[in-house]
Image 1 (spheres, helix red, strand yellow):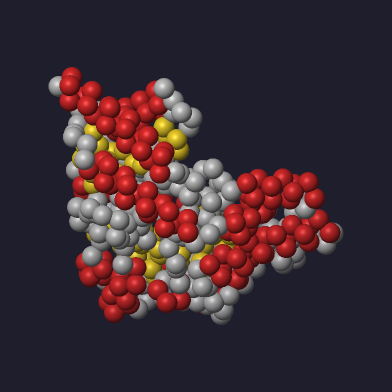
Image 2: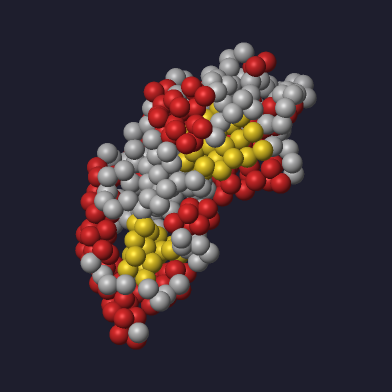
Length: 403
């Protein structure tokens, strides 16, 4: 018998959102919903103010040198695409002389895998894939070893969205710099921003893709991209990120060319201002204790699932070096079927499948069916984790008895 919805899919999107999110979005729509940057009237100015406060908050969160280097996007996938298309098209337009080369890893999300693979399939670039180990760890030296003199971009997720394994970004960037200082390093931080402290200057990353709707607890359709001085210098003539998205920015009205200064150079079209009002409220409401709480629940999940016969878990054995994500399978039940059963019969929301990260499942041996991912959030309780474990134990016992 269901005891109400038990939501364990926070790695996909956090839920429930803090009540301040809906309140801020409703208030914005009621009193401030002008078009930011598109007019001098009060509502347009107030909308622009909300957007700029969200930008500044994000910049402070990741220790960006200035807010203008935080480009607001429609989500992390949008940020990744802006990065990959921008760097590759920038190199091609600049006449790099040789076929560009890029590096990606087997832990990457399809936002990276499919975008780079599209260019490679068309013969426009060469791509090298660096495999993770069975725990989901990418060795920084192996990552750098794939870089050569033609490598214009190297992409690495901060943490696997399937396994939760956290990568040594600082070590990877340092190793890449020693191999080819001109290679731009793009980090997909969808799973870590809002959970882990991130200092883009200390890590020396060139591009950092951010999701607003996961660890930051904001609404869907919000994200950001940090762009370093190396990727887009103040001397815009040397910019290495080209934006094919053309349109109005509100910053430069006359002429047929896009603005050349950040963030306007990479922001065309009306911003999701109401979404950023919600994201700003979410960031203001978030506390540092959220992640610690989620990791305690993750430890309970690992311990509990590890004691259930017929359950196989993947990735790191403990909570050190991982995000609040647990990936597992049950003997005799396909991942999607187990997830569907938990949803329909128990009102428990988990995610079964390959989690838009097919290559990591190939590496750990769970392809093509994938596995079940459980990811607690800041409002998940200890009792709810107990309920989840009891249900899984009952399901596993039923499979054992049937066998």
